Length: 250
Ligand SMILES: [Fe+2]
Image (cartoon, rainbow, N blue to C red; front, side):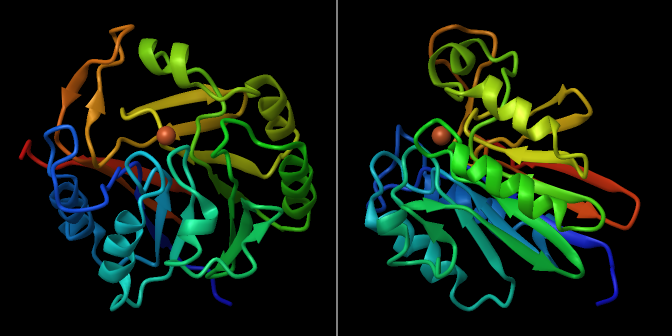
């Protein structure tokens, strides 16, 4: 298939509740829609939902809200779980066939002559099995790959999140990722802020949440903004560009 510039939208950490009630005083459904319906998200080749779709504990109402919204869309969707999701419940609303193994949702998705990889870090770790699978699958791909997972595989200079909710096996994951020479760009969420972090030759792009942003300079939880943020990636033959958008504070 002819290679073209792929346009990928990433929505992360929408934290949708079971019903339409506000979540921590925020209209998270409206925030999700602001990202989803944004001009910047038009003409996508792929939409990625990178975890914490549900607010607290895999609320089915969260998944049905998103799944119903996406139903009429022709844009393919790749979903991975975050620490507030449950793959079993997600599977009732999203087509995860062939994407779940031993209860973990990790897979490769080929589009436009390129390969995109997804890992499951919902329990705060990336398992050895996923890491060896990624290494061997990536080796089969000619050319560059990109990777999505929920947790950053690195500390990010976010006082609260680094201290309380960072990935539990960072060293092991970084070592495994560093061995994958055709992987340069890694997209994550979970931290509710925007940042780019270099780990060796790889760049970790931390995408903000559509729910709300957390102040990286405070060691206790401190809301910095209730404005939704999201990322749009353009990936061509010899380049990758990404841009983060924020909607105005509702
Ligand atoms: Fe998370």
